[in-house]
Length: 337
Image (cartoon, rainbow, N blue to C red):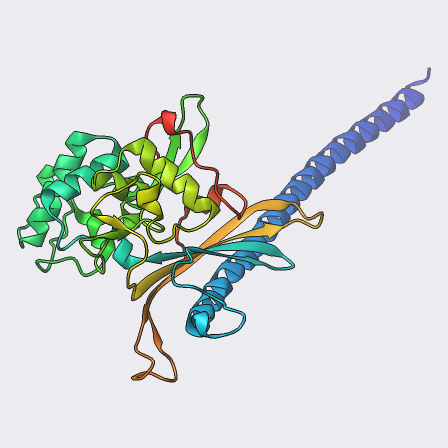
């Protein structure tokens, strides 16, 4: 081979190598761009689905408020005061609206320390933590400041009563999981949603007797109902609300638990789950809630209902299951909340 041909072959080899390197670089860039586009597309789609689910939840809260305004006076009857759950089905998803009377919760500003200890222990399963939190609630109610060195917030409680239930997060020993709710596992390791103190305590609550159709299982235990019986009550009311006198007939008598009662302030908490094109429920779930007060229609004929609070995000036990009747955890698993 002549020197001229050797040089020509070397140039061709170098050019081919450069083309291969350029192709590899372009392929890497194309792969990176495709990955970024796919991730961004998925993120945007997830955000869009989340927004759609939130509109379903917030719109269902508004719809439930309208049903409460219509009440039992219309035919057909849209809502009965003993109805603890409304289920709405739409083309794009399903929504469960929990109707929770605030009078079925313990009044945080009036509860005794013993009641608070029993209640917090039923939710947390930790008696020492229950003692600490109950003592902190009593201290803040009396106007005492809480030292940060004892685990409290650096913020000082400005008054000697709770104006909003979220102020409970300032109490020493309180955690977001204990306040909002968390997950518990049974003896087989399966997870179940567990309600928090927010579902048991309220600034608009009462001292009882509490409505058995809507009071939380932890509050049942706090007023003397054994855990297994509390779980039986929860399982029974998932099927249909209790009627007057039915609790005693079933062997669940307690002086601090009744059926019915005059409820004026309610929390309407909606959990929406989108539906896939094939009709199956998706994993996209959003919640919204409103606390409303029913007013005297004679005094407020145009709008006999006032919205006290609105929550754009209100965690619920329904957030971990498709809308519909809940399957309560196994009573032998421990805390039946």
